Image (cartoon, rainbow, N blue to C red; front, side, top):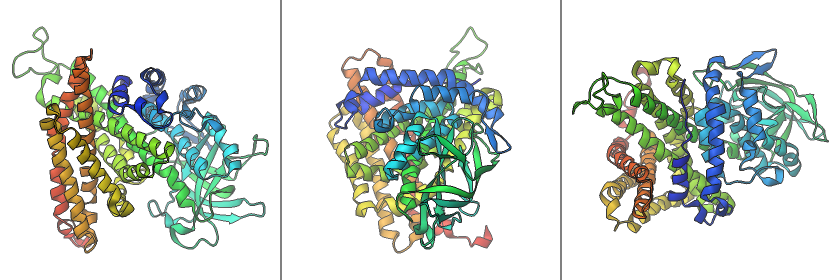
Length: 592
């Protein structure tokens, strides 16, 4: 049986020692003192450890079942869902006007990590609802918001996003689902959608589907797409549930992982739908949900790595095999625990340094989202837009890699179901694929985000890193181990950006061939920046006489490992980028 322990202490370190949230000028942050965030995280941790984590292997083994159009979730999921709903967790950062608690997105992200680590498949039900809530909140009419949001916030109604069809995934301009206008102002929605997470289930009283479809007069491609609310049950004027809509789950996907989440084929046969936002402007509304989902998937990636690392560490501390080459460490035992061996240490340090760096990166990004929304800060909005493909792509690639490393730590035991590592590997794998594959994320980063605001946003990122290095250049505790490696890595990133500028226009394949490496190069620089910030906070805590010296010294040692062993990968990625399109495009298609 796998274990899970909520990392509340490390979260508090990032929130208060590194990000110093209580000192921020972001509205609402002044309420986030250590006692308050500690209380919220402690309660979320208890729910994660005691309720959600034990259900994770149950959901994996049982999966969901479809019978006569009804989807049943695994045993225990409904009771857990009701407990989450009653605790108000689904509306933690939602608008108080509609029944939410109005907490910052940052706090919701910290809580979300624990929910994902403990049971990723279960958390997807409320995660999709949150995204649908956000899209309706941003683009829906006042009547739509009043009708749907309170029920979605309290969890009695859930939500989905319906994009993909059998003939198209990324290229949404090819969708065939039709929306025919009706005399009463509604639309008749007809078509098929596939891979719809939480498309049908027994957890909530109603499911609010957000569906992309083409209405007459929109033209070809994505410009003709509109977004519609298509509820499972129609809603009467008094808010009660009415007739069943003309939609049905036609099948459940048999998947590699996330078995506890119902991934559905949805059939719409003249279902009644209601336009969200402007006609033929559906992509703008859907991207509100999709961008939130991409950030959430990045969190899923490292959160799966986090729980996998916890289990790998516990195994390494307990498993006896071989002797330390420098001499027995457990002379009264027949062998030493495998954590004494350098290669096991390397494996665990790779995991630990990524997970803790990724947590800081994600929380920093969440704080940026709060600044963009609560301060109406356009520069923060642009920066998180630039970093979204990095957060999604890099953290899920490395999160999956971390799960594989954790599985490897267990040797043969990691390949068996009993220990749980193989489930973490399978569950984490989808994060690299859905909400836009990581290849698409890299193309978005290089093809669209680098040119954001005429390149001013990426230059602002470079300037931010330079300013941080300059501000701390006199800090001898940071210089050799942190500031110098960060400076070198940042120069590699700038050199890669310059290569694209000089070669991308005249030979676009030079940029596209290096886009994936650029995404990883950018990700390493971001984690290098986070580790330098964490090192500074840890050193300051030690200088101030912190009682828990082991925690801060461990943080410094872990950071030094990342800077010495992981950050140098930026040079490799730069070399690949500068090799251009030649090696990539050398073969004719017929010669593969």
